[in-house]
Image 1: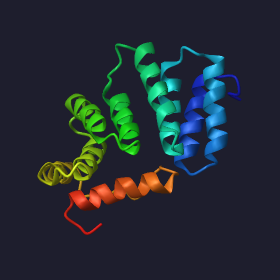
Image 2: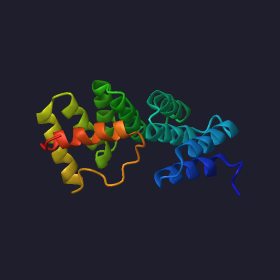
Image 3: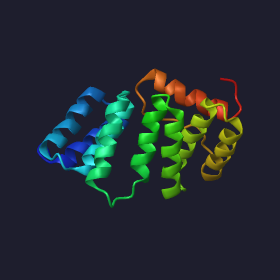
Image 4: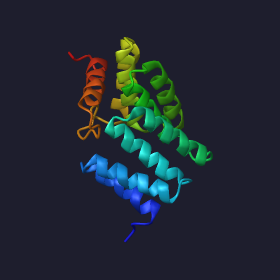
Length: 172
């Protein structure tokens, strides 16, 4: 019913991606949404998320930055969090940490950017800061490692998980 509705297409793409559907097909859906409405900030945001899940980190950053440009008054915490994740997966840990810290300033109650920041610090060798960040995650939720990681690239998943293990003081 919503084959020409950019909002329906982008929402369906991100939802189905999170349920494990074919990521290539979901990229096609979100691309169709952006073709129908190239000024759709939320569509660019959703596309950025899907690109991170697919391991397309440079494109993810471009799409997330486009969402910020198209909606400059929207809260920027979530896009910055995901831009930080893209830099993390690119192994640009310093840049990732800066974006994640900015995201945390805007939304200090979300455990997701704290997890990524802890993994960043661990990979940077800043273990005291990593452990302090793990303590902040645990103050928000007992779950340090999410059970349903959406990252389809096995190397991305392992980079993230090994950072969290190291930050938690576990053997990697």
